[in-house]
Image (cartoon, rainbow, N blue to C red):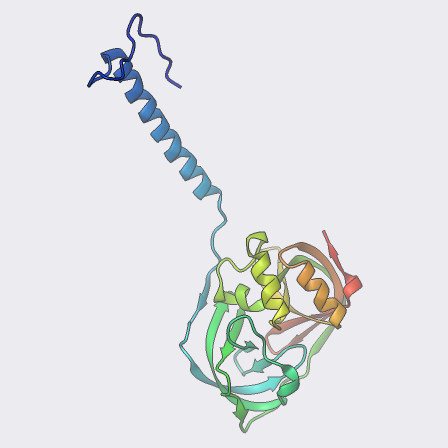
Length: 239
């Protein structure tokens, strides 16, 4: 910080200009403060994590067809990929009102890495011809570490859709029926979401721990391209 040493100079408020020494000192202080502000701004931006490579085709509803599974959440299985289904806004699709089997619908696509989701247009789901959903492949009991997320925001509707900054939004989405997910990363750093399946108590626990780092033990399975982790409430613990 520049120091002030100007002998007998002093500032008089009603004078139009400050004495030369004081004026130079003020200019140096101003430049120093501006430089410090720029440095702090650059440091804060650099310290921020990068946004996820997520996208959401807002209001771009297109036609999709595939096999609908209603457990552990409404999921549309297609030969190339499986898509988690939600309703508009912070609302899920009521699985009890849906029937498993081949369907067609209109939806807006969200994507984040290998994860895909459709915001279904209300009233657009109807029966179609085709094959049923694939049977889950089971891989036994595993313990995974990750973060509780709401699948809709994380898969692309919000960015960032994870972390404590998103915690309140995630809790609202989960309370509205958006499927809960466990966000995990493999050794290469690739992120993948496991859709959480479990009891009502487990669902309540996911809302309470949204945005938190947790350790979860459950039965791992894969249906289509969607990974599923079946748990109970006692198996979800804060790290």
